[in-house]
Every structure is written in structure tokens, then in C-alpha cells.
View (cartoon, helix red, strand yellow):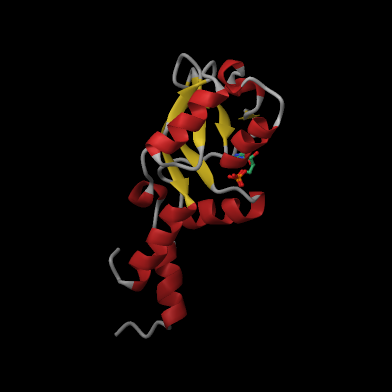
Length: 150
Ligand code: ADP
């Protein structure tokens, strides 16, 4: 036995869980798709947040459920309203990379009051979206920690 307290072991574990271990696949839409089609995508793909990308697959925006709801209660024709009008746009997007600690992403979700962040890879064209981390991924990591499944 190492003589470490349970809290020390837990901290050690938390500092050993990375984004790449729990990230899931991103669901992306192009910036010229309509709000109507984005809402259909949310249902078909069963996600809460969509990431918006340009023609080079680089991150330009985020669409949350409430962004889409807000647009829906306005007097707009949803099938002719492009998502880039209503999305939260770069550079105001919180992102992470696959080598980041999951606990740092969790802190960002709380601090910024958001549900998910895109996992990106930096290239000359911008931030390529390669994954996503949501509160669900963090919850799964929490359960894995309790089950000693890491
Ligand atoms: P909801 O709006 O459905 O409660 P969120 O809490 O995730 O979902 O989003 C709150 C607001 O923050 C929305 O306007 C959304 O566009 C924006 N947002 C969501 N994720 C991010 C992010 N990773 N970086 C910056 N803004 C974000």
C-alpha cells in the first residue's frame, strides 16, 4: 500500500483522464444551412449542440438548443434563415484539444455555463473539429472513476 489518502488517489486519477479518453464524435453543419435543417439534424443525430464549420471544415460557430429555440419563436421563415445569423461565432468559442485534461474542460463548462465544447486540431486553415466533450462525457468519466474502470 502506497500510504496515499483516498483523496490523493482521486486527484492522481483526475490528473490522468484526458479529453481523448472520453470524447465523442462531433456533429457539424455548414454555415449556409437553414435553422430548419439544423433543428432536423439535432433530432436525427440526437445531440444538443451542433458545431458550424466553413468549406474547409474549420470551426466558425456553435448552435445550442436554446439558440435554435430562440430563432424559432421569432417571426422568421426558418427554412430560409441561415444558421450563421444566429450562431455563437469565433473567436468567442471555448474549445479543447485531445491532449487536454478532462477536468480542465469540466471547469470551463461550469465557468462559461455551457453544455459542450468542440475538440479541435489547429491547422493553417483554422480549427478543424475532430470531436466533442459534453456534460454526458464528463458524467461517464465520473462513473468510470467510481467503477475503477480507467
Ligand atoms: P443552451 O443554450 O441550450 O442552454 P448551452 O448552455 O450549451 O446550451 O449554450 C448557452 C450559450 O452559449 C448558447 O448561446 C451557445 O451558442 C453558447 N455556447 C455553447 N457552447 C459554447 C462554446 N463551447 N463556446 C462558446 N459558446 C458556447
